[in-house]
Length: 231
Image 1 (cartoon, rainbow, N blue to C red):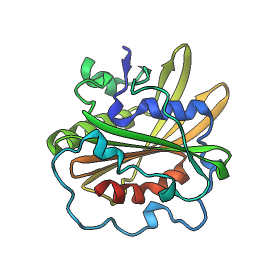
Image 2 (cartoon, rainbow, N blue to C red):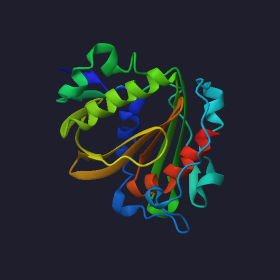
Image 3 (cartoon, one colour):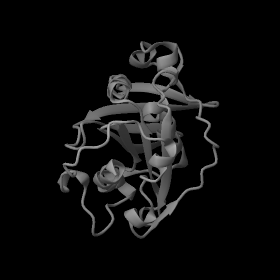
Image 4 (cartoon, rainbow, N blue to C red):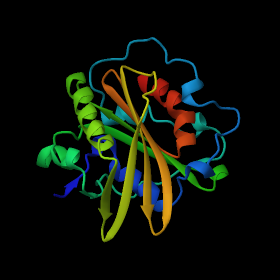
């Protein structure tokens, strides 16, 4: 049974980064002068607003080059807001979500913003941040459902056009950030090459922060992304 992964956890973004060949865990060292999120300071205790934010408001809370530091360049968006079609094969957890759930229908949050950056000091490694907003009663449960489905499949396949990509997943301990958090490590295998990527999602009130890319870059910028998304 074939399904397209929900945009709520951005399998399409992960695939796009892996296909670019830019996000390898052993080729993107932690930028000097910064510390991984796991070792950083806890997020501020200020309670985030519970009302959903508009896409315009979310875009102002994305990380930018000033937040990331030297060596980062923001990539130009070329999809005009269209979601990439990613066909998933061999993941019963995603299939059980049903048509709309697995294809991102009911789980696709109405308000969102996205930014992708390349890191020149890590042989072109990339890190992507996505912000979503909806009511808390939808944002948390829907994200949890999709994330658990994805991490519940240790090995499956995605097809982009005519190109099959093997995907191996491993659930990681969630960071102590926000109200809820999820994290996974994925290995994409195609053409005899493996690309290791990390994806971590944090819900802070009515905002979901998803950071994907090289494990080192995700760890480095996650805490800062959560802080800024809280406003």
